[in-house]
Image (cartoon, rainbow, N blue to C red; front, side, top):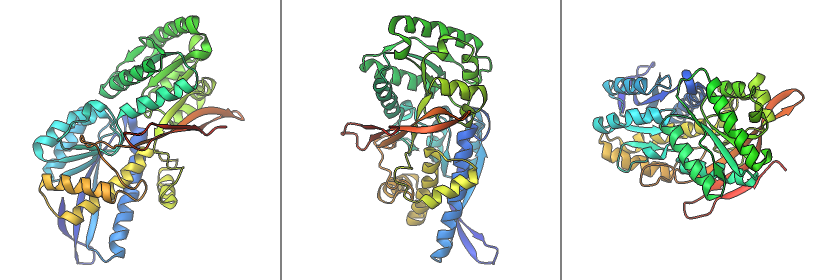
Length: 398
């Protein structure tokens, strides 16, 4: 959406208005905060660029908190629609995107998620794009890593929503293809506050796996969001759960709460390890931009937030190159801009037929103890450069 608006100096500017819906509170606030910082830096950089070339275009972001709640996400999308906004970036979870997708299709709104990864939402022809890879890639990455660690039995504990359920199924299938035994595990509801009973059940299953395979060959696979710390604090009181390796996912890797207090101690003792999408340390296209986001956030930004930065650039460049309000034409232009120009940090974004990113690059991080403090340390990388090429895996902790 673009509109002419008077500037402070009396001259009119052409505003590119973009809606941004992020979880800034509740279960995935950490991820939302990172993307918020990236969006704000991107908006400033884009407007500086327009000024530098003498353009009268400016980006204006309308940012709203979804509270990690699908109902709130839909409500916020409806409010943006009433304001005439036709391109929306965001949705921190697949559950939120699932709730909003049908409305977007019916009302001619383009959604671009930079965090939703559930393959169930890969639907050709809809108005939802995901500039991140689906969890089929993440499932393969974690299974590859567990095989490299010699894990023969996996006990999952997972968040029971569209994202967690599907990632658990995909990962279990990948584990099984590698000849690992996958136990039933434990499913918990989003919003759960007391993990005592679930942890007790998990402890029993892990005990059985240890008896059958030995503790060195048993791993717990945790699919969660910010509640990971509370789960680990409860797990620290169960003997079997402290005896085996723990592994995580993109929803809990790099959480600050997992390198502090009792949760940090448990994560270090169990060598908790998980994949982050992005790997921007490998060859940052613009280190100064990453540093600006880091400074604005006050901590290291994750890969999804950097994709969010790029996404606002892609949207802005699409709008100034097409100046169309026809959604079908705008989708074609968006796909072309994503592929041919991409963003300043990750470059080209090639999409599959369902509008999801075709390539995937993961950096594995592990919690370790150093001088009575806990820290995240990069330990391996996993890359899929093309759908028809085998993955590349390399340890980097040697």
